[in-house]
Image 1 (cartoon, rainbow, N blue to C red):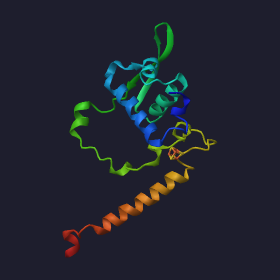
Image 2 (image 1 turned 30 degrees about the vertical axis):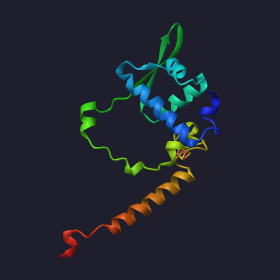
Image 3 (image 1 turned 90 degrees about the vertical axis):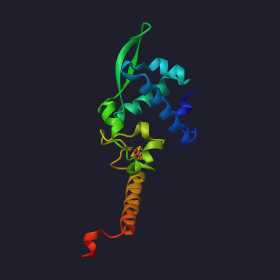
Image 4 (image 1 turned 90 degrees about the horizontal axis):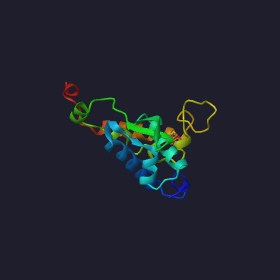
Length: 156
Ligand code: SF4
């Protein structure tokens, strides 16, 4: 694989799968983490693509990235972020329905998108795609609510 990984030549599904697999690999490495160099080798990514990909995960606050020496060369140690203890996390049911179909998960511009720089053309604040998705999701939510049977209070 090459820079095409993040580019437009691969299907959106493939990019999304790759990001998922890389994140899984980092998660499996646990608290010890994994060196970015090793991860790139594992997924046959060149260093630029590897860096962009883990940069995306870092931007989403899913992992931490710290400079580290690996076989005499500087690279990064990637560790999955542990905001909630695994026990608590396992007990909590995860509701992903609110983010189902979210365009950011498979967006070709995700690696360029940031809300930190106002001059950036790719930002959730300016994004037409995310705006349309929110409006459509909200419409669907309203329709679902209207289809719900009335509550007991409404019968009184
Ligand atoms: S906000 Fe828009 S441009 Fe940014 S990642 Fe989401 S869909 Fe892509």
